[in-house]
Length: 331
Image (cartoon, rainbow, N blue to C red):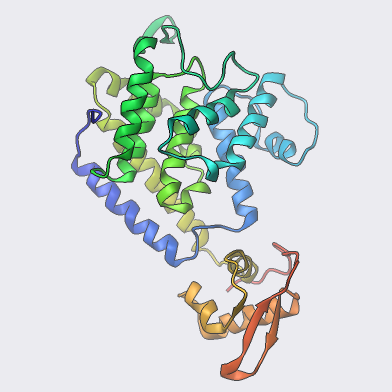
């Protein structure tokens, strides 16, 4: 059964804009950012998602935890971060269409924080804002059936993935399938759904923008609850995604360094290649700039070069250590 929502002009405009930006991201080689940027984005995502739920740790403290350094902070907050790191480290292993995978993610995320993590709730729950009841979730006996229907909808080919990811996020909040962690799971699973079709979402910290518009986030959820459909939430989330993609393109339309390009190219796993192969990845690069990049790669012993002129080929050096951010020159 399809969850209730309408396809509005705003939704159509946003999905078109997002699709256009995803195309640009592919042409700008940004689907898999550099390891440094991926690490920074993971930290931002974990910090923002947990901050929404009241976690007090800073990005600096989360960075320290990732680097196995000791920090001082509330035990519960540290445990939340440790759990989130485990989950985000294995994002690519989750199956977006599997309820079993969904439950295993919740078990990892809430391990040691609640009783019986990874299992649907068996109690009635209400969400309060101050002394006011903001939302009464469906009875626990209905939760397994509602989630089964939601996963069936997710597998449907009749709707765009962008829209289905937003609907799944909202419906997870509405059904409230767990005693705790529903917000985190809704945001996490939207990422899992999106990255299954668009790899860039594995490294896109759109939760940061949700955190910055947290009041609007909860207001839109409440409006949709009262209206009985998720249309406004879809519009809100598509705007968040569109803005996040714009920021990624803006960040990478700056003067991108040769080292970042080389790092990205190496991550593609090509063995032997030519300058033409290099330029096919970076389509907006001049032949002179490509030659300088390749020369630098040879100087840094990241590539070996054989042949001459049009018969020049390069091979990635086995066991290299990529010197990110060292000797940067921008073009």
